[in-house]
Length: 269
Image (cartoon, rainbow, N blue to C red; front, side, top):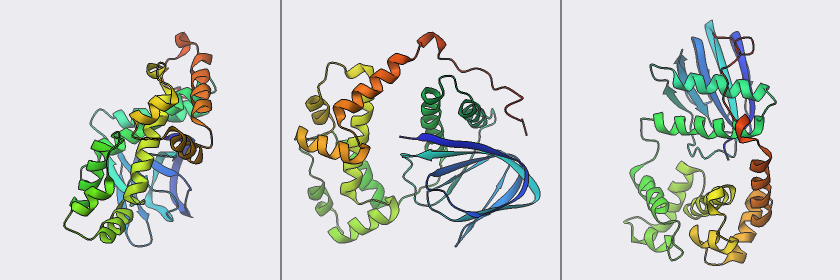
């Protein structure tokens, strides 16, 4: 989740031609200003602005005076927005530092995968935390919030909650999918499976077997859980846990550190 699959930068640039990515694209403007054009709207930006663009969305980036930026592509992101959003860095430029470090470690081999995972989660968290304007309608946010509060309960009945709302079931399902990109039931299942993946990746759950993890994440039937987990992640839960634990074990904790970015590798715009 939030895997950094590519990181790059534009030195002084005036136009990036029309294109799209199959991943989330996070763009940090390090200097200058410009406008990103989509089919139905535009987003102007300036230095210290961050634009988050969902997958498979055609866009063009242009500037009269030129811009520089760092861009990061995230795969399997937990960003649930269906339209591009813009946020602004704080006065201490913490997000810029995260972008620069992520770019540095993408180009660096030492402990690369381990650190890129951490920076992928950090950048996605910054986007969610700094997004100030509502991105969902009140009713969709109510459904989403109810799922988040109850997903770990094996007895949770999403259908029962949806039918208790003063709207038709089909309308709610269509509205939720329009705003979130998935149906309420798909969102619930993804929430459970993503949480299970986090449990299986952590050393804090070594005493729990697969059936325990399934129940902790809202699945009554371990076999059903295993089937759905393999469908989403392409690997059985037991092998997923073993693979993640081995990856952590291979790292020397004394070598896991975050060095200062090399000025020669990261040009400060």
